[in-house]
Amino acid sequence: MTYQMFVNGEWRDSSNGESIPVLNPATGLSIAEVPSATNEDVALAAESAWDSFNGGAWSRISPGERSTVLLKVASMIEDRMVELANLETKISGKSIKQTTGYDLPYTVDNIRFLAGAARILEGKAMGEYVGEGTSAIRREPIGVVGVITPWNYPLMMVIWRAFPALAMGNSVVVKPASYTPLTTLELAKLIEKAGVPKGVFNVITGPGGRVGEALARNKNVDMIAFTGSTEVGKRLHELGSSTLKKISVELGGKAPFIVFEDADLDAATESAIVGGLVNNGEDCANSTRYYVHKSVKDKFTSLLIRKLKKVKVGDPMDPKTDVGPLISSSQRDRVEGYIKKGIDQGGKLLEGGKRPTINGMEKGFYLNPAVIYTENQQSDIVQEEIFGPVFSVLPFTTYDEVISKSNDVIYGLGSSVWTKNVTIAMNAVKDLRFGTVWVNEHVTVPSEMPWAGYKQSGHGASLSAYSLEEFTYIKHVYFDLTGKVRKSWYYQIYGGN
Ligand code: NAP
Image 1: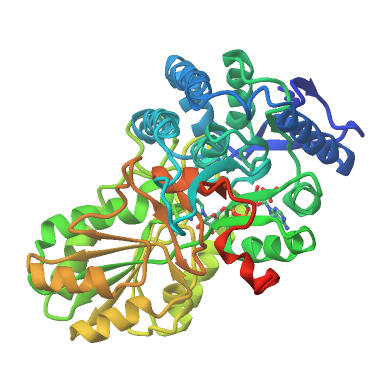
Image 2: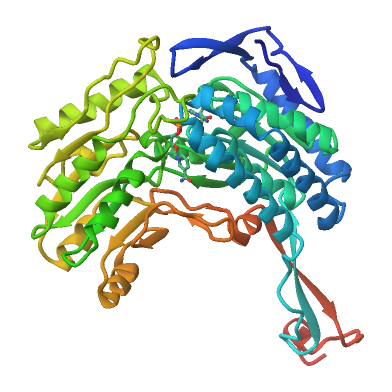
């Protein structure tokens, strides 16, 4: 199947006719072609977005009117839930039970929250802060937002970044990840049908190194909202600096999962499996470093491995599959490389880490989850984001030691603490330098709460009302109350005259 891009309300090929294939990671075979946008295509999309923003058919209508249109999109996604979940699974390799049971319904809930919350955002209360005048604050859309998304939650990440922008009246140009552009293009069809004016929502496809970079350089683009790797996030800051774009980045993670001596080990290991394997281990919130108190480490590890042996790796379209293939052959090589480094740097492979054979899908990118025990805090498997199903288990003795080791990475996205002791939990919540701390749980994020990073996990905020503010400028408005020709403070120029 051949897809087209969506620019200025029209479906188009790239201006030079070139396209790139989209593979199904379960089979390794091509399932579609999408255009490979040229610099001219990017410029046209950015210009259309700017014209639509200036025209005001979206930016100047009321929040309630925009909300009504976005809610329509949510209902349309809901109506096509099964079809979209199937497509999401085919392009990403994540299990069908995850896309139907979680990704799609949660995405619909995200839109409904954002569309509703946009109606109650307000400037701060008016007040007479200098006595002679009344001040007020307005929140206004930024203009054109370039949205660049990763492959791990293809549709959801577009919603998290483009929908708060749209809700606040901005126009957007989306550049989806090249592995997974299809559900974003399907979304564009729904947005068109829902009545979003032409030019307000555009999708361009093609390699990030060219298309994403051209978007970040474009003078008609006022802001880049990026979700992806820390490396590309840094590059976008460089590129955006020539036009001083606002850059909002949501980047990698390396979540610690801290198990204190008194933790419920059955509950902790049950969650450890899900925290490590959800989304095939390709989730920025995945628990990846399991710091377990040395008095319970053996019991924790054997329970973990016993539960892991029951996990079924296989065809993601099979409803019984728990873990599907990795996104690509190179991603699998990368994860295997980390397993090898973990062992070379002093770790012991306790379980998994080999390629399974899935009947009829020998070319798929499958890998059995691996458990590695290590005491080397500086090992690459402990310090770097692997983005694959690798559990690193490390022992600890004291509270100060485990907090210091947990914070000792460049990332600061998700983290969790397992204990029944409220004092330990509350101290850990305070001392962990991460945007989210779960207590006796890992991964859950309600639409109402912010998903945001510390340190090199970025500085944007997704979900919650904070993600809406992110796509606005703040404006101070001042009304004179005196009606006088010469106000009291003019003496600074007029002196005694
Ligand atoms: P990535 O390699 O950084 O790519 C993300 C997007 O950036 C893709 O659309 C990519 O296009 C594009 N891109 C690549 N190079 C570019 C460049 N030089 N200039 C502009 N754009 C460029 O990340 P990924 O591998 O897709 O996704 C995995 C990463 O995303 C992980 O690090 C994960 O932790 C992070 N993530 C973070 C969050 C969060 O909320 N913090 C959520 C999800 C994922 P191509 O696909 O064409 O290369």
